[in-house]
Length: 190
Image: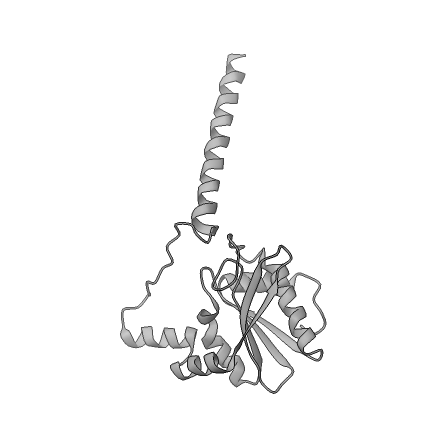
């Protein structure tokens, strides 16, 4: 009887400690207002490599200015009532690219990719994921909660252009989002 009591106490302690660690990690990493530090460190100290990396991520300064001038803010309500926002730049085409950013990022993180697709003749949508950038939300979904959000962005594009052909692209957590969305029943436009 004593052994069962000791095992029960040990199991309770392990469960309590596990719960505490999990709760801490959720609020430090996934909570938008958590203590997670957004890293600004770079892998290289060579100024030319840093400049190249920034250009690949954010695009040229000319493109950033062009994007600010020509793009418009799109928004929609998520299934759980959050206001999600993204930037859309139109081209004279039925080809669209939805480009998803990474963890703790926002649409500006994928402007280099947006420039690439835009120059190839795509209309480009760069949504801020929930709890990122200008989108509402407290918790980051790490690509899982964003599945329904991307499906709504797809619907919005199809409402805008019923002949749309949509490409999904993501980097880092955005890639996880795109992979997760790819497992869903998607419209033929994608």
